[in-house]
Length: 255
Image (tube, rainbow, N blue to C red; front, top):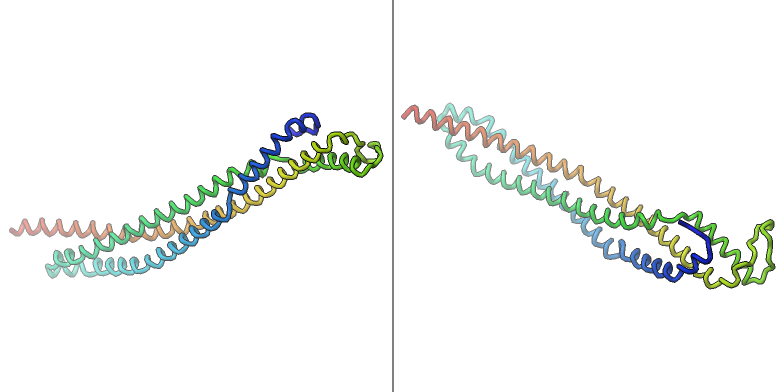
């Protein structure tokens, strides 16, 4: 609760200034130069890795398409020429290699998404600390109370005569509490400054968090594309196992 009671405020002034100074130190530790440098480095690494993933995906897709086309067009021909087993066994090594590369790319997508989420978590933790500092004070009420104190100090320091409320001035009733008034003003100004800095910094970190969030859809698109290729490889594997089982059955019947 805000109050302009001299007795109450002057009694808590020493504790208040100590608390405000600690908050100032806390603000200095939130999003300092090292934090900014680390964030920029991580974002560059994330973007570079996304580019590498997208570039590395194209050869995988081309190889998968070629493998699928060869399998779908030649399987029937090899059946008729009784060379299906050799054809399928010849594709097995290529299928395994392609499958391992696709699984590796899929794992890299998971790691990339985890890195983005971790960066967002760090930002969210800092924002959670800043928000109470940014919104805890009523700037308007602080200004009104500071103006009241300044008017009293002005009357005292400049040797003005007491003036009544009808003239819009505050009578010189605080001349004995000038040190307390100055300390009060210092605390209020420091508190307001911290609130403004915290508000601006929180807004900036929220914008950075929103920027990281925009990367997630692209990561998911890469993951979806990789999943499509993996599904196609699995389809070839399943069909190959089916044909090999068919060949084993027919061979047994022949024997």
